[in-house]
Image (cartoon, rainbow over all chains, first blue to last red; front, side):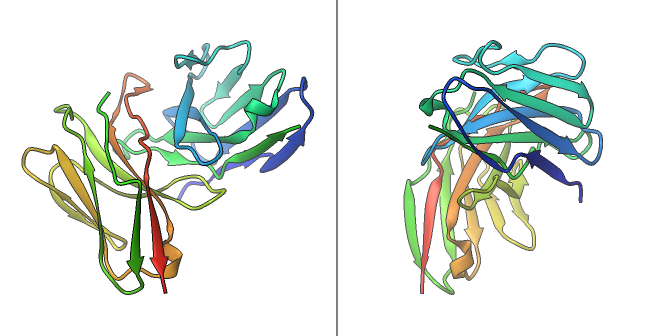
Length: 115
Length: 112
């Protein structure tokens, strides 16, 4: 089966700094998404990472805070900018493969703690 | 987007069958029903997906009545390693975007 990896797996950062999270898939995918999961909570969709164009953000999330890149069909990055302790969460990427039905598959997640 | 309602938590003894029901009254015609399992500090893992009637795989069964306004995930003979949060999702993907929302999930605790 295809592999989805994320880097880093975890990090501890100081407030005011930025962190870029990478999502790598070992085969081309149709769609890629970024989620946030705050401690003890469910998953919230941040944005759809569109290949070759600007990401589409959900209500409550903006590009200045969460810039996203998707330079090709196997890779995407999410940057958490100007971090505050409220940004402490698990960040997950997910992918959908064309022809594999209406199913998204998730990466292992990046656990972020902001001090 | 279809909203889902699940029990917040459930307890079960090892070896028992566990049934988790999800309500989705405003499911749309093209929506699929998908269940995920999530362990602490890990990404959700796909368990099973269905559109109507019954689906079974090596891990679980999914029962969907004719009106599709609810679904039941059935886990046969659970073990301690099945302790996790289970999410029911309704929706799908079209035009490069998703119309799927994660609900609160059901925290299953398997007791020895």
